[in-house]
Length: 134
Picture 1 (cartoon, rainbow, N blue to C red):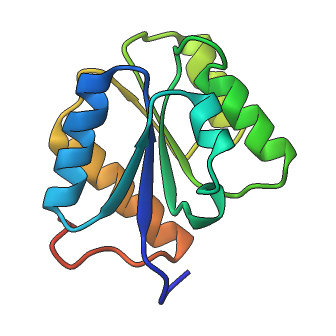
Picture 2: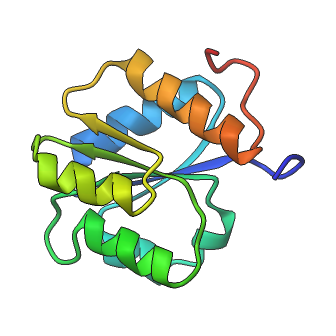
């Protein structure tokens, strides 16, 4: 993916989380787009431009695990980092077994999220902004 713009997509029904994570990512030079639901993300044309997907698990309508399942079934290899306020070992196992690149419990620190994103993007061969911590 080197040479293309690295775009982090955030899908979370909590507006305050979307804004906070967006602000953090932008402060380190990432291009970021946000979506309030899985359906909104799927209805956009942004999947092909997605370098990393930060995805909440518990959302109204289609939840994060269902979105992951749909993306995997369609052949998508976009790295997914789950964020959740619920520490459910079964959901974590399901997400990771289906190929999630990361799983963070809310509240997580900025450093935890940035480290996870950096690792995911490096492993995917995506460009990491120079200002992003390594």
